[in-house]
Structures are given as C-alpha cells and as structure tokens.
Image (cartoon, rainbow, N blue to C red; front, side):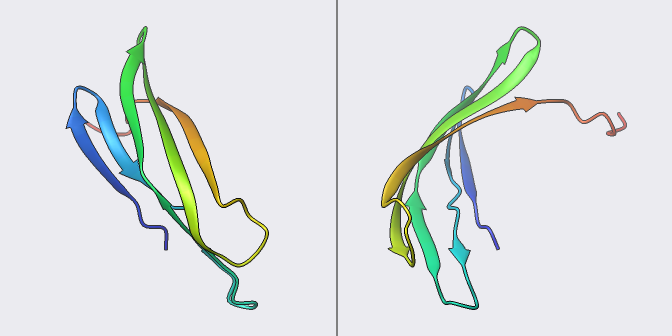
Amino acid sequence: MQPFVTYQLGQGWFVRSVPQMTFDWGTGRQLLPLDLGAGRTFKIGRQNVSCFVEPFWNVATGGPVPRHGITFGVTLLYPNFWHRQ
C-alpha cells in the first residue's frame, strides 16, 4: 500500500505528500518518512509539465538510510489518447 495525498491550490499550484514507506516482513526492518511538498503544473510551448519539490524526514528507520532529504520531480503530461469525446 502506498498512500498519497494531493491538494489543488489553484492556478496550477498544488501541495502533496507521497511517503516512500517500506517494510521487510522477513527482518522487520521499516522505513517511515514524513514529507510535505509543493509543485506547479504549467506549459512549455504546447507541452504540459508538472514539477515538484518534497522534503522528507525519516521518523522510523531499520537500517542505513538518510535521516532527511529532498525529492525533486518533473513529469511530462500527455492527453488521454484513448478517451472518446
């Protein structure tokens, strides 16, 4: 299960939380991060683009992982070619 939350703020801006949680059932090791990011959807020419930055802090760790970090992302958005109008 990978929970996520996105809230649209308007004018292309959004806030999001997409924690990358892991749990090893064999060893009991876990990784539980807290994160909150912000991003924006916009156009470059005719291409829709979505960018975000999301800092995280690992609350519970069961191995050698960083305590905190930042996730960056860029997504090229394409129309749904299979949708009938």
